[in-house]
Image (cartoon, rainbow, N blue to C red; front, side, top):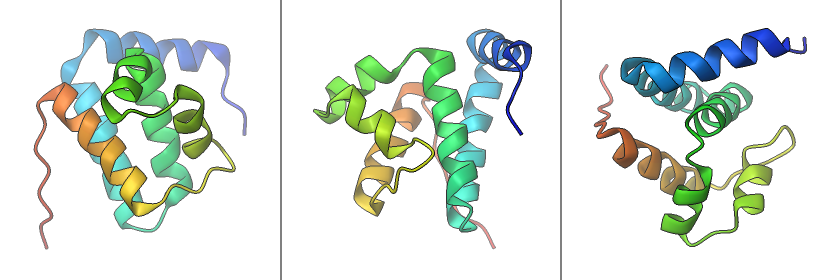
Amino acid sequence: MPLTREFKETVMLRAKQDPDFRKELIVEASNAFLDGDIDTGKRLLRDYLNATEALPSIAGELKQDEKSIRRMIGHRGNPTLRNFTNLLNACKRRESLELHVRR
């Protein structure tokens, strides 16, 4: 189901204004990946990167091309564990976020 433009704009606006919402996008992306729902995890990371306009700075930090990162988290992308964790860690640092796995 394609998202409407209004919904995407709402997510972007909320992410720009609400640090807790940005953190939750990263947390939920991590949970989705850990649960094996790779598509949802990629979509949430994509939402985070688009909403915060953080891709250029994160790409520079990771010494990767922006297009490579976009492909990696795109619909048909298949990120390696190393690429995913590097991207996730960059997003976590940007938001001063620590993640812990609990039973």
